[in-house]
Image (cartoon, rainbow, N blue to C red; front, side, top):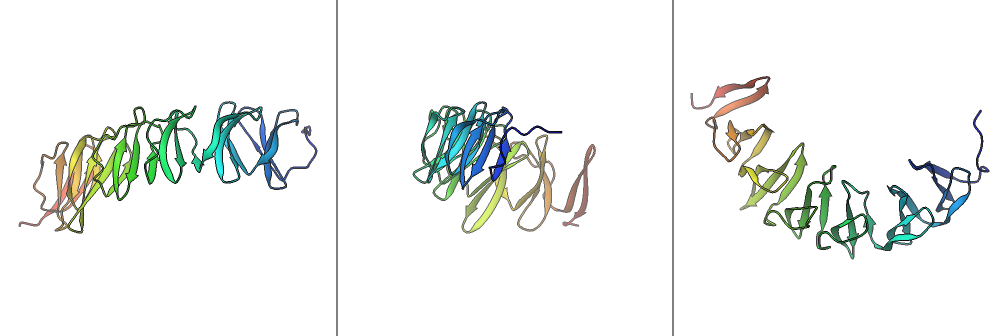
Length: 238
């Protein structure tokens, strides 16, 4: 039989990996220890684990970080604080996103409309105004010109898009911002080991290598990757 450590007085209880629990009562959140003792007062509107011994918490309309004694570790001045990824934290302040360390040391300026961190925290996509760039999550520097109309993570690479005269073309860049396949195609169906299946605006397919070298003419109805190579069908010039 399980032993009760608290009276049944909380609306919700969320256990953490550290053995403490986030509890909710009358719409407010606090923290109890493994003996059921309240160790962080019930004064927060939202609360989630942050890192070992620390919690993200919302008080009013601002977020900060506290420890298990209720001491403020990161001040409550942020609109949003994300869960750390690879030791990097995405936050929003004064309606702009930026990157900081787990101790709130700034990595990048809070100057972006949108930020997306890779799950390992080693790469970052950011949007400034209408355009996207890649940020170095260590230095906070922009690794590409802020010129892309689209960037998104796709496995171990980043798909890129540029719009010219109302028509968007796509390509591939790596996580360090180096172009692998130029933004010159209607679509890229596949990219692996430095080879891409590309489609032009005539709905024709071909193979292009890292750096932009065409391995085949872009003239085929379809190209499908298979073990050891590709299956090509339908030469449209015939």
